[in-house]
Image (cartoon, rainbow, N blue to C red; front, top):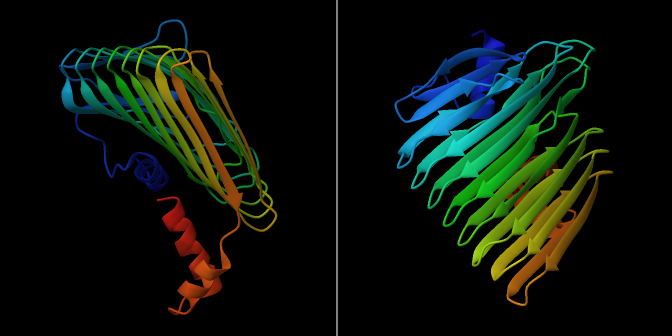
Length: 305
């Protein structure tokens, strides 16, 4: 790998070198490396671009990395990745996409991920997005996620847009079975004239199913964001959505939460708060010797932590 590829891999997947264990690295729309293990198999799709990841029953304390890197201009990458997780598993899946642009022609990556979580399994999915490079071309990343969680299963998603992504539309939808849980924690930073939209759509179908959707975002300069979260309580269940956003300069954030109870035993809550950085927070940090800009950076860092 060259320096750009190593930098992208470090930022989006936390890797300083090719990982041990199961992995599939995608570069500029093609496979750039793969490894499987006794419990985790990765198979190329025959009908379209992408892979199927099969995780055997009772697989615990194992991980799979599937980062995607784009280092060239003029790339339009669309990939389909399906995760088939067996029963009684406890696994970590690390994805992420980094787009580096050096010229005036942009590139885009759209990853369509489907998760089929077996009974009593727990999956932690970590995904980071990053735009880099001195070029003026657009860096577009549009992730789509679909999930089905069986009885007693848990899917915890931690998604982060670090910086530098020109536009993104993030769609996540799925359904949760009995005693199943979906937890989504997203963090988004936009600046300049960037645009970001989040669209959650969750069906709580099973008895005692749960959903917790939390978004933290910062919109700087002239960037715009939209947060849409829909939770449908179709049984005895607990659902919660929350959007907290900081706007700066001429930034704009719209929060559109929607909850629908289709059962008298559904308990659903939504919260939204949008505002600027409080003046007293800035003043307090500036009395400790920080400049106003440094104080803002510390507050944002803590908010998105």
